[in-house]
Amino acid sequence: MSQNAMYPLGTLLVEDADMDALLTTRAIKAIPQLKLLWRARSGEEALCYLNGQLPFSNRQQFPYPELIILDLLMEGVDGLAVLKAIHDLPIRPKTLVFSHRADLAAIQACYDLGADAFYAKTEDLSRVLTSLGWLK
Image (cartoon, rainbow, N blue to C red; front, side, top):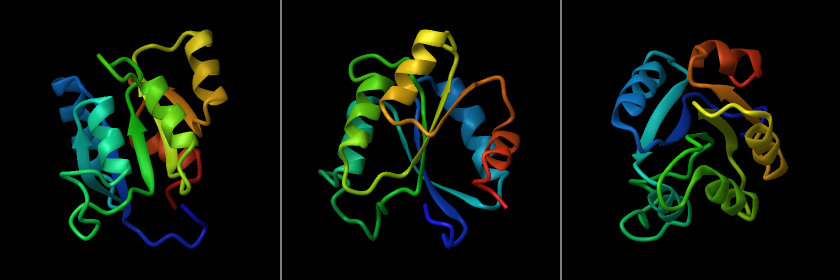
């Protein structure tokens, strides 16, 4: 996401818990500067989306995100594995880890793997993005 990015910012939500996804989706829809592109229900699905693999190969239908909101605790490919994969992508979207797990080791691991920000899910999403300067 560049300084010149046009709003709304295409957002990929990576969240396996339905209730957390519902709450985060509502928050995204309430922020005019964001547009939910897709909710990936697993780390595997997120990686398929980011890599343009089937069924996400049509970039007109599934545009590349400018922002990823990523849960850390997921079965299978977890948030740390997704962060590692994002770090290796040629184009790296802004990545916000939004998690219930907020111990220092988890936070440091996320930043070490290239996360741009880490916040507990108890925080207000709009306030978080504004404080990061990602919303104007």
